Structure formats: structure tokens, C-alpha cells
Length: 590
Image (tube, rainbow, N blue to C red; front, side):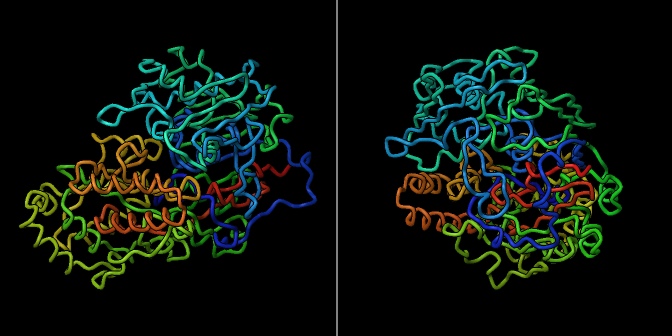
């Protein structure tokens, strides 16, 4: 993930190392090195952001953050095998003894927790802790920004507006519904779903399905919204310091036992995340190797420095340039008073200066490939090229302001209010971007290019650590929001519903008032219920075409990712299903 140019979400479990196309030189773990030689030292992550988006497990939904926190702080029911290559896409037990047992055709799932696992205070993990953690997702007034699979999939009734009748463990409204859907018998957790889901156990790899100790969360000083400051650890490290704008420091958790954990290596003595490192300072750290035990958490440098890093053999050996499983895009906010006119959305799409943005990144090698779909090709069976959009004869990679003007001329008649706003120098429309030097350059490219078509644009620059909390707030989101997405697991059921359904988890389009939404949502529901996988894949392709025909997305890109580290960092590899570095393999060379 290049936080200077985009935000990424989540991961995909369908690619192999070959299809991911890892290029550059990877510093692979030496086979002769024994674990004892890797233990010790401080592993330093540096980032331009002033914080991670969230630390609360039920609120963590950014792919790299999931992988980082699951490696060092949290434990989950199941995990991906911590190895590179195709084997890394294998689910393995973590807190549970198996990867999950389905019954009733996949409508019921059970996991039995291992014994001997302890919280950071030494108290034992219980099934009740696991059940309680799941319940927190329903407190949507407190637990914001996290995945909504529990709300969507658990067998809990909803009201006439589609809202769950269970409102979480703080209000306890509808508690009986939750207690029926999620049960404990000894150390065995059982969840009952409203429909069969044959791969629901993949959701068990998410922090959102992690346990939380009720007594801690119900304490007003340590729980609820405050749990985001200091969640309790089950993993090999616990939080010593969490200072927004400064650093997150993780130290060894004495209550963690390798005997119950075959996934985590716990090589460093200390894991430190240094926040608010300027882009220039961060780049020099990796260009000059001035902090030898450092890892770039931002996944890429500023464009010129990124190119220089990989063109120099001396530095390129400390980096990876990889085809990522993410689609980067800008989501049109189609709610009333925003981008609620299809013709205006199309005009912006065709006027956009894609080539200049590719050039800024250093070319396709570092930027990626212009896409035609919310579904990445690496998802395989669910992807098919769409028609129109980038395949339209009027599409030009450099932008086509002349064609955009013809669309705006039609919009002047068909949707005059929106037309007036986007062309009025005193109004215009806004694009949400990260607040950093690269995005300032992006804005400087976009503004004059769109002006050639008669479009007026402003920019809402948001600090990286608070970006998602801002754009996912309907009251704060602008007209276009830059983001990125990959499937949670190998099914577009974790792409189309998440991105384009109300309460899907990441519907930045706010499209539920769009006149076409009801018909679209009905087709999505039918696709979700389809048990024939081939027919379901065909449904996702049709729905992806619909999304692109509505121009709910602006210039999707099938992304390219860069990673850098210092010369005293060993074990750097790419973790395919997580779409980032293989954190469990990283160690400090002593």
C-alpha cells in the first residue's frame, strides 16, 4: 500500500506468488538462520500517518493494520499460514483447535477454543470473551468503521428499515436475539447464520471476530470508545505506549505462550511504530539506510524517490515491487446534493488526467494498470472485463475534456442543479485526499485538467490516521473519496455488497437514495443467496458491469505496491493473502 497515493483495504485469497508478480529483489529469510539468531532487538516501523486508523479489534478494517495487529497484538479464531507463496493462502487454527466446523449446510459454524490461553493480566481466555467480542459489532453508535459481516450474517431479526433488533452489549436492546444466534458450551462457540455461508470461517481471521474481556469493555475508563486506545493483548506483545502523533510501542506479553500459538514468531523484543514521520524524512531513512532496523509501513516512497530506490541496485535489494490484489479508485458520493447526476459523473470520468498521474508515480511499473472493474482480475472466476468506461471509444488515457463538455451540456438540461454546482467557480465539487506532499501534487494535476472541461474542483486534505473515520461519516465526506479495496476472501461477495450496499461496511457511494439502488440491491441479495458458485460468479460479473455503467467509481486502477526496509531487517517477504509484508517473518539482524 502506498499511503502517499491511496488507501487500501483488506485482502484476497486466490493468488499465488507467481500471479502476484513480485519483482525487484526480496530479502528472503536465510534457511541457515535459526530462530535463536533472530530473537531480540527493536523492530521499527515508520509512517507518515499520525496514528493507525483503529486499534480496537472490532473497528480494525484496513488490510495492513489487520496483518500488523494480528501478528503482534491480537489473536483470531483462525489465521492465514505465515509463509510466502501459495501456501500462505491456507487457513490454519489460531485461538481455535480447527479452522471451524460447518453444519446445517453451512448455516451453523462452531469452533472450540484452545485451553491455556491467557489475557495480558494472566486471566484465562473463555468462550464468553469470544462471544462478547462478536457482540460489540452491533453497537454501531460506538463501534464504527469495522466490517459488518456479523450484523449481516448472524440469524438476528431486523426491523422494517433493515436495522438489527440487537443493538450491542452497551444498550443490551434485543440481547435475547444475540444470545440465541451466538452460544457457548464450555469452550465451544457456535454461531447461527441467516443463510448458509460455506466460507464463513474466513471471517474468523478478522480482528472483528476476536475476543474482548467484558469486564474491561464495560469499564467506562477502559472500554467502549476508549478501548480503541489500549485493547488488551492475547498475542506475543502488549501495548506499553500509544501516543497519537508520536509512537506506538509494543513490548513482550509475559502471558503469551508459544505452546498455544504456532503462528507467531515473536522475534523482536520491542515493536515500535513511529508516527508523523514527514515524507521527506521517511524517504531518506530508506534511501540512505540511516535507520537500519526500520520498515516502511507506508508501502512506498514519494514518486521520484520510489523510482530512485528501485533503480539503484544497492537500495533495490531492500525492497519489493509487487502486483497487489487491490483495486484503487475514487468513489462518487451519489447522495442528494452531491454527485447525484450520472452525466456529471461520466464527464468527470472522461476528463480525468490518468496519464499524468501514471507519470507522476513513475510509470505503470510503480502505478499499476488502469482498470475497468471494482473486482480485481486476481479474483479469477468472478472477474470479467466490462464494456464502456475505459473501453469506450471516447476514453483517452490523457483525458478527453472535449467529450466531457458534451456530457456536461446534456447535464445542464437533465440535472441543472448539479451541473451548476460543479461548473460554478464559487462552488465546485470536492475530492477527499490524504494530506501529504504527493497528494498535493496529485491535486495540482487534477485541477487544471478538469478545468479544461469546465469543471471546478476543490480538495479536502485529510490526515492519514483519520482519513477513514472522516470519509465514512456522511456528514463529513466530500463528493469523491479516494480509496482502495480487495476481496476479504476468494469471492466477490466480499466486494460488491461491501462497497455498494447500504450498511455493507464500506459504501462510500451513499447510493441508497439513487433511483436505481432498489433494483440493484435486490440483484445483489439474489447473488448472495445463489449456491451454485458458477452462477454466482456470473451474477457478480453482471453487477460489476452495472456499477461501472452507473459510474459509481472513478478511474479504478489495478494496483502496484512497493515495500522498503533497512539492512538490519531480515525475513522480508510478501504475504499474498494479507497483501503486505509477512510480518511474522521479520526480525532484527543482530
